[in-house]
Image (cartoon, rainbow, N blue to C red):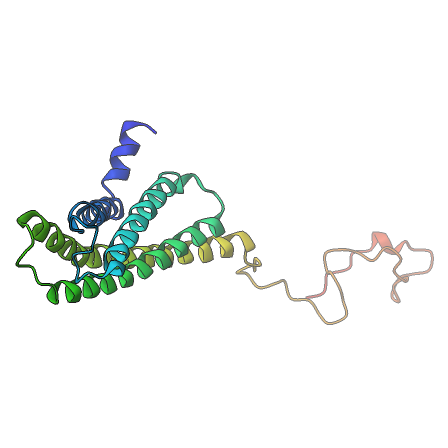
Length: 218
């Protein structure tokens, strides 16, 4: 990829939002992994191990998913098969919508567990990290919601382009805008003489009927 292509790719709204989602995911699972446990390895979210694992899990998978879709997006314009593009965009739409929902669940879960936690004996850095994980879980709902909307709009655009291309490839039967030359019923083509026509009734005996002018029927 040349510099212009890279610059154009980086400036895409979907790419920017995906990079922001990567940063938010790193903050969430990084804060929980670093300061989400006490010295005994107990989760600080009301001592619920599932809360810490959930936050770390969705953060790591969100990070890997964003990296995967960024790698696919780099080569997206070089894909010639429209069906492949459609399925990739549909997978992006489904993944983004699912993770938007999972981030919402994670935000509610972590916030509720933190609300029930006695934070008095905790250190300042532990409190800050746990609260940061909750806050960036909420921010992730917004970014992944934006990715869902953009993937949906992209999928609709691809469907429109696919239908347009299919109609053009199929082609419409050509119909002339001009009316055909009128002919009498049963006379056939008035511009072509019959190869074995009978001798004209008004032809004289011994006279070649081919030499006699016959006006075309109208």
